[in-house]
Structures are given as structure tokens and as C-alpha cells.
Image (cartoon, rainbow over all chains, first blue to last red; front, side, top):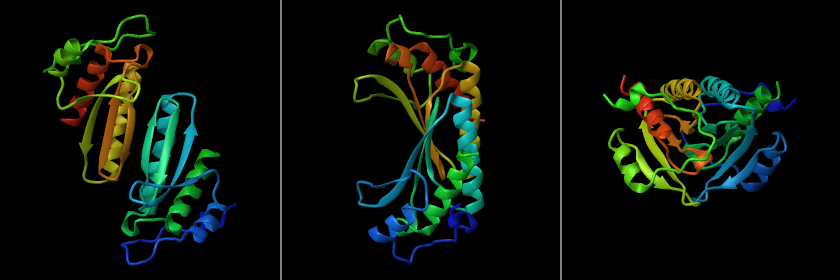
Length: 114
Length: 114
């Protein structure tokens, strides 16, 4: 089990540096199947696609994701519809990735694998 | 009140033509603030952005959208996060817009305006 599951997102109002690529790769190994991508502003984010058998199952999943993100006070961008969901995570305040993002990813994986 | 609110989406497995642009414009007048756009495959869809004051309000809204779409058995593509939601509606089976799409749009507007 990832040690990230025992951690909790800490408030981040900026003022810290985002992870560099070596830190990102170190943390990427702790989560399952999350891609690291850069947006048009060169800001790193995590992305993962999930498949479901219908709309209701997609919606039940993203509701659980919503509960986790409220508990962590760290909110992803979510796209979903019939049979799919896509989760994008980044730390807007620092324009990049932080430990918080990987904590959220690990906790989302945990509910998907139940 | 739009007459679309009294209608119900009917199952569409294809075999009918999508609306042409004049039919689209006629129906667009019956809904509030939905943009008509074309995707990269030249397929028309409806799109509308909604603003909220936090994550929970966004999520409550998209849950109501989900209930409606299950009732209508016509499902949009939904993106949401902290303070926003974007709804995209099209009829995949005919690769374009049909009355069903505008019925769903009208019913989504009704829950947002409550």
C-alpha cells in the first residue's frame, strides 16, 4: 500500500516550488497508472482515465472522488459521461505538481480498486 | 416555459438524419445560452458553461444533471471542478443534433434556474 494513503493534503497557498522532473518521477512510481503531462502553459499535471460499464457507475465513482477531494480540500478537474471518467490533478497555487497531488491520486486509486 | 420541458427524449438508435442548420437555429431559440459548436469530425453539439461558488455546488448540480439524463436515457459529457461545470450534448447515434438534445438542454436549464 502506498505510504501516500497515510498522508493528508496540506493547505498550499503558493510560496513553495513545484516538483522538478526527478521528484515527479520518484512520486509517479508510488501511484498506479497516472500519466504526467504538461499543459499549454508548460504546467505539469496528473491525468488518468477510468472505464465503467454505464453512466451510473461513472457518476458513482466521481461522487466518491468528490468526497475525497472535499476531505483533502484539494480538488481535481473531472470529466465524465457514459462509461468513462477522466481525472486531472495539479496544484494551481504553485503552477505545478506537489505531494498533495500524488496523495489525492493514491486515494482516488484506492476507491477505484475496491 | 419552453415546450421542450413537456417532452421526453425518445430512444434514438440512428437511422434518422441529424438536424440541418436551420432546424438547429429554430431549436436553439427554445433554450437559454447553449452554444452550437462543431467538433473536429464536423459533428454539431450543444455546449454550456455554468459557474458556482465552490466545488460542492458544482457537484450537486452535475448530480442533478445525471439524474435527468438517466431519466431521459440520454447522457451528456460533463466536465466540472471547483466552481464550474461544462455540459456537452449531442446524439452520437446520428452524429449530430436531434430534438432529444434540446429537450435535455431545456431540462438542465430548469434545474440551474431553480
